[in-house]
Length: 134
Length: 134
DNA sequence: ATGAATGCAAAAACTTTGCATGACG
DNA sequence: CGTCATGCAAAGTTTTTGCATTCAT
Image 1 (cartoon, rainbow over the protein chains, first blue to last red):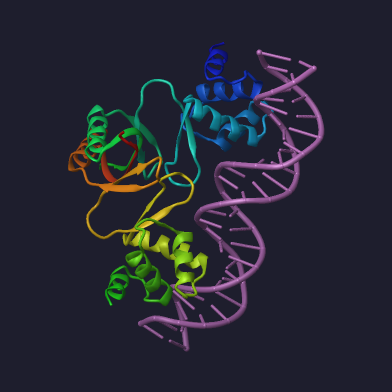
Image 2 (cartoon, rainbow over the protein chains, first blue to last red):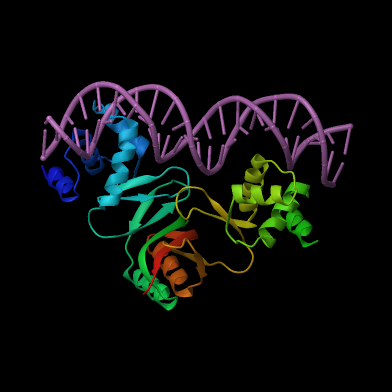
């Protein structure tokens, strides 16, 4: 059970809700899920976890670096498992589809820009709004 | 009164609330204001505008391209006048200070990336989280 | 005059919190 | 066993909406 060691490494007690939520994020068909999405998926799977717990756990996971939180539209937040390497997102404004991409060039430029202003880059959020080219 | 023609150009009826809100965004000390910020500033200025109207008007302004909406933290949205050229933002995570910057290189790369995936770039949101270098 | 815009208050959407109970180490 | 985590419901935030009234053209 990989999840358990992930949790321990993060300094979090291994509880049923935490394990279930982590598994859900890992196995769900959709990679980006809102707290509500996770909650509903758990309910459908017959797991009895409160919505408040889902919010609490996701926030803890974010603090622990296990998941990343995004605000694609400004409405609700979505979470995704922070496996693999860092990436940015592209949102098709018509279909709402989310595409992930990696651009070392942009990453490097961001660091340069921050440095130019006397800052160090901690983190960044980049979302491209795109439309399919006809 | 420049505001009036701006509104007319946007196809919006020239009403007192709209003019006042536009002036407020233009003259306020802070460039990035939440709906609440605008509302409070108007109240302090003795202008009697409802908060709901502020939200409605800011949303219309956004649709008209008069203002840009940002979600720096995910909590509340902030608005800024869309004068001048497009720019991105850097947020000092310690002081919450917002610095604007322009990077043609990043803009170009974004366009390239979208194209590589068969999309055209409509818009983007880039926020760097930074910390002052000691 | 007439349709659009406003203000108010109520509601909606999302997220957090208090507190008693239950589970982990 | 002590402490931390959970569930529920209540409260908090931010934003939207219904509806009667007022305003712009």
